[in-house]
Image 1 (cartoon, rainbow, N blue to C red):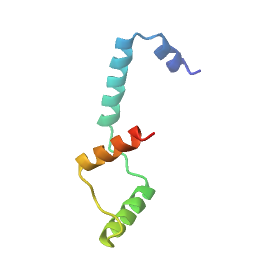
Image 2: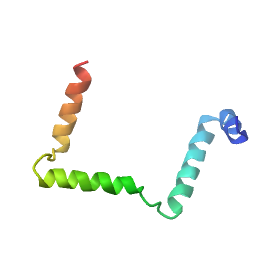
Image 3: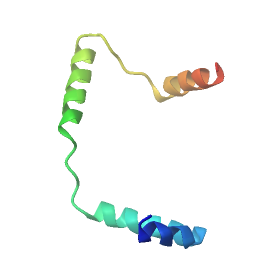
Amino acid sequence: MPAVMEAIDRMSSDERVKTMEYLWAAMTAAAEPEPPAWHGDILAERRRRVAAGEEGFMSVAESKRRLYEEVHAR
């Protein structure tokens, strides 16, 4: 196990939260990463399907309702 992981295992919950906040700040301060090429391909395909009438959009409320039904149908 890498030393950094061992150090994290020894941290208190408060120290872990502070470490996560530090890491997040460090990551977001860096230059924005380029999205992978496949991401553009997926978006293009989704736009094509919407334009062709094969797909559509739903409201957040409708999405929540469907998710709720799926989870409680099990």
